[in-house]
Picture 1: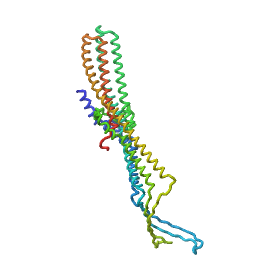
Picture 2 (picture 1 turned 60 degrees about the vertical axis):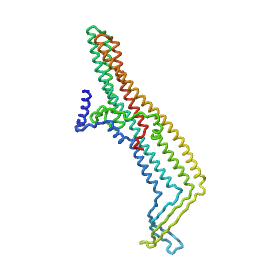
Picture 3 (picture 1 turned 180 degrees about the vertical axis):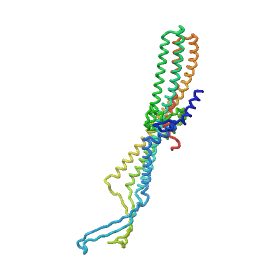
Picture 4 (picture 1 turned 90 degrees about the vertical axis):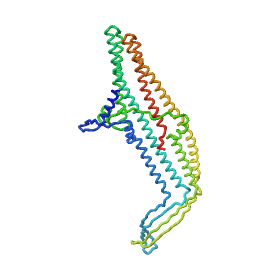
Length: 432
């Protein structure tokens, strides 16, 4: 507990610790899981691209509603003409006018265009959400690897100290003639192996830190020198999700991003079907203009006109019929795609949820084995010191303890990775 308290105090002190980089005093940037995630979602190109695409579709959604409003424009023209029968032969007319057009009916085409734009905006929003989920999943997996590697590094240091202590015990027994040379050499080999594991663990820790910096935070800091600017805090990754009940799975599938995209695709194709159908209807347009004209400035002659135009499609070479049939078939096909998406997502969710549940159970089992191995190791050490146990039997128990403790760390990591996969499939309620 004292060591743990010192470690916590050390990290709190580092929050206020300043370093010099190229002669300039700077404060180290503390990177926790939440700060890493926040920055990654702010700077990752995949997220930024999908966000801008979504905003572009929002602009197109506003543009699609323009058909509901009248179109007004100003027009100025200067026309010079020649007539051989005229006395002047050439004439020049200048005019200025306002022109107004308004579609009164177009077979509900404007309604379908607006619906299409709204649906595409919703799909773009899901793509944005999907991109954030992808980045979150990959970052969490990498961060879990880093936290696990930090624990493995701490474990390697403890194992190194344990192997050194065991080596001293064996050497002491050998010097008193109670142990053979082979036991000493094997203990030295164990110590050298632990020393290698400890160095390799530190190297892996730096490599994972560099991966987080370059692939998610897009920092160009060399992983070997990252401590000059960045301090990673190995906070405890707490499980926040509980396994789902089997009865909950069907409803949860309806909220997955993939299935929601399939539903929106069906809505989009339905809109396109009605949009194609609008070509069969007549269209009615109102147009009018008002202005002045004359042969010279100022313009003194007034003109205006207003009229209704009814356009009836009689024959288009089969284009309208073919377009509608194609849109109808695409819509019917999407209904099957949606059903398939539901089944696939249900299967994936069931498998991931099962893996998550089993990893929780396995962790409990591994903890029990590690607890038992720890108790047995303490007893075995006392027996070996008192000459009541052979080196071979003691060595087996020591090796089992080390392996069991490593297995517990691996099980912890597996739980968090399975939780990340489950969170990736599920949709946050607030994003509905």
